View (cartoon, rainbow, N blue to C red):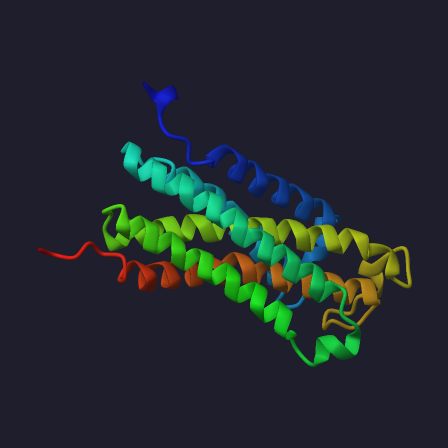
Length: 224
C-alpha cells in the first residue's frame, strides 16, 4: 500500500523549502523594488527560482517506489541533516566576522565545516553503492542529501538577515540602495546574503553529485 512505503523525509524537506521561499518573499517586500538589485534583479530572483526548483526536484525524487531505494534516500536525508548542521555552524561563524575578517576570506573553521558537509555527501554515495545501487542513483541520493543540507543553510542565512535588519541607517533601505551594493549596511548585507543563498542552492547539489559519484566508485561490490 502507498501509506506503508518507506519514508524519505520528503514532507519535512519540502516544507522547509516552502518556508524558505515564503521568508525570502517577505524579506524582499516590496517586490517591485527587487529589479533594482544587481544583475537587473537576478540577485533576488535567482534564489526564488532555485527554491521553486528544489520543490519540483523533491517531488520527482520522491517518485522512487522500490523500498530499498527509498531506504537509501531516507538515509541520505539523515546524513544531509548532519551536513546541514555543519553548514549552519559555518554560516553563523561567517556572520559573526568583522569586516576586516570577512575581507580576508573564510577562516579554517569555516573551511572545515564545508569540508565536513562535502564528506557527508560522499558518504551518502558510498553507502548507497554498497547497498547495491548503480552510480546514477548514488548521485541522486547525494543530491538529496545536499538539498537537505543547503535548505538548512539557507534557513540560517535568512534568519541572520532578519537579525541584522535593524543595523541600517534608514527605515527604508530600498530607498538608500543605489543598485551597485552602495547604500546602507543593512542593504549591503541583504545583497551579500542573497548571493550566499544562491551559492548554496545552485552549487550545493553539484558538489553533492560530484562527491557522491566519486565516493560511490569505492563502494562498488567486488566482482567474484
